[in-house]
Image 1 (cartoon, one colour):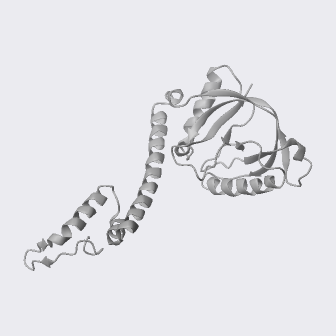
Image 2 (cartoon, helix red, strand yellow):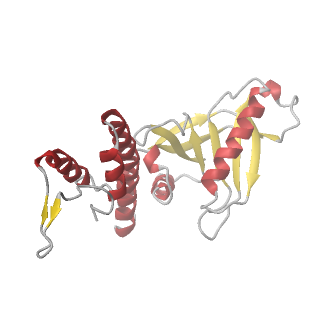
Image 3 (cartoon, helix red, strand yellow):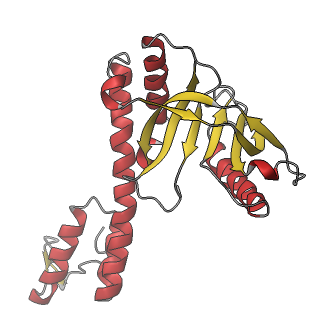
Length: 249
């Protein structure tokens, strides 16, 4: 396999035994290959890094490891989500800190769509982008963007989902884009890191907040939502990016 990829081509192969011999000058490359493989790096990527010049190889390694760390962070949160599922949800409160806050009335630009979970990330990105561009023509975005789930979104159910981008109250009559007033309310919420926002692990947060509301004798007053208070795309997996929130009464 190594030989086919141009890694550690033997200096000599014994015709009768198949024994491979290498030059002393190949030792450094051999050690590098062995160390890269300890990172669970696929052989084609190992070959690419070994064949690159020093600085370029370092760049390729950094790029590979950045992707790997994002994957590990996502897998870590997925494992925690699955553990809660296997425990019958008893562990939800232990993982999440639930808080309350008051939310004032807001005028919001809106876009709504029926969408399944596999289509959701791409649609959210484009819809939020469209609404933010519209908001810039009307005084800018004045509060965190939020996404309301009017129905379940999974492999079988498609919401609908509503993206809401707050603009100034004095701008409500100056735009032809769809708007509405989101009423003032109290909400229970928990804050998530970027790695926790992926589906299905984010469901643990929705479960935890819903259980907290019920255990405190409160009622859910409106559909649940995700509140995005920072640049999601630019954030690292460990950065806090989003609140899962339930309006309550």
